[in-house]
Amino acid sequence: MMENLHFLPRLGVSLCLDIGSGTQDVLLAIPGLEEENWPQFVLPSPAKQIAARIEALTAAQKHIWLYGNNMGGGFGRALKKHIEAGLSVCATQQASLAIHDNPVVLRHMGVDEAERCPANHVPIYLADYNASFWESLLKQMGLPLPDRVLAAAQDHGHHIEGNREGRMRAWRELLQHSSSPEHWLYENVPPSLTRLRVLQGQTGGIVADTGTAAVLGLLSEPEIMERSFRQGITFVNVGNGHTIAMLLYRGEVRGIFEHHTGMRTQEEYLEDLKEFRLSWLPDEQVRATGGHGTAFAPFCEEAGDYLPTFLLGPKRSFLQGHGQYCAPHGNMMLAGCYGLLYGCLRTVAVV
Image (cartoon, rainbow, N blue to C red; front, side, top):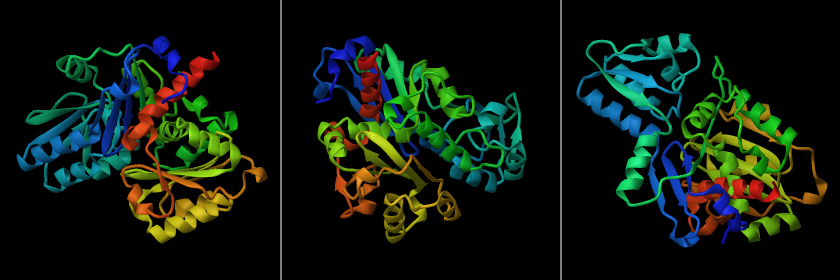
């Protein structure tokens, strides 16, 4: 049972969204209803839905026009196949940010800028969050509409050259500000985090990175939080697109490692984690193998070797046998949603 639930009425009915590359995981937290009875969903991610729409229009030999907002770019492969089929892709300046930040790269890909829908093009609206969709779904199911929306998504930030260093720079800035992940929830999103900034404009609520949501979900389990006060532990979230690992001690983050899930063998990941636990894994070494990098807080000798390892994520079987599976509140896929709620409840509790 989640701690600090007595603060939930202050938040009201909360729609919690953890938006990944493959799925969007959803929790509707309702004050006065047992936690076990809160509605839960695991749905295709918005990017997956966009990809399916593009694939259908490719098969129908239709040109497309993308408009709307910056969002997760998990539809890139479908877009590439659409262009390779000899079909036109146009996009507004804002929508094109979901593909790449650099207009030169976009033109090279074959994406033309158009602020109005060209003739013979089918419009496709881009958004990580669509309020009317959720309102319709919840009403059809006889569920209450949310008083607030809490949402997580991965944000690479705005980088003309597509530089992964910017993402790790954002993690370092968070570590310098505070090593407590509940302080990594954004009430005011920095301008550099363009995807989260747009997402917050759509939801009106607190937003966070998916890595933040996941680690808070892990720490919302009292026995894991307590374990971290006895010795340093390693948390690994093996997602559909990205893998993130964190070193945790006394409920605080001591190190962060990020890579792409499919770019390393199990043996290579295990070697990375071995060096990561020792704070020996250089940021440049990770980026040289196609990953995002590493970020460390000051070395903490009393934390020990961080060998106890807890595995989350839809691809966690990749590291089966090299850590303990965990399912916060009985549902591994909802870890990020519970993490968002847990972080907000902890913030409310200390206010």
